[in-house]
Image (cartoon, rainbow, N blue to C red; front, side, top):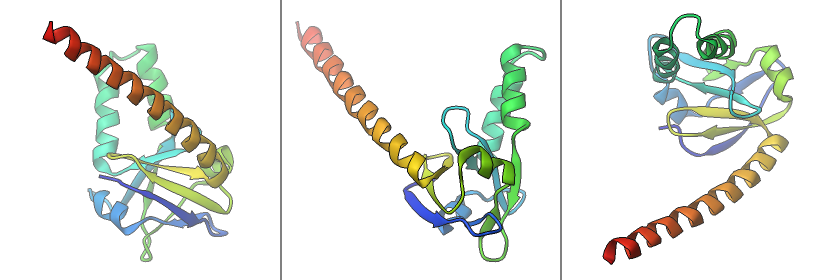
Length: 155
């Protein structure tokens, strides 16, 4: 699993050192990762072969010509970059991805289990605060539902 959060410097050639733990998880038919503009957030999303295969299987479940399939093909497959690791474990992010999400100097690489995201440092700070609030509220709601179920089930 891709775990933890790392701050990394993006060099002048848009290269970033991928954490060693992430490189090991991305093992597949080539030595690198797949990245594309995230659908759910303003960042780059990436992962290894299993991550790519997962998106591909979701797309292939939909009928050819289905508007959702077309949207996913355009967003995911059309935006996908296959990025190989160099000898130092770096990937070079495409200029378009860097420009789209304001990736200039310091970036944040966030592990999300089967995938990771690359954020601008400032954008991630705001996103993390919003996600913590959502998680806090959601967990409180879930616990209340569980308590109500236990009390209701005990009657």
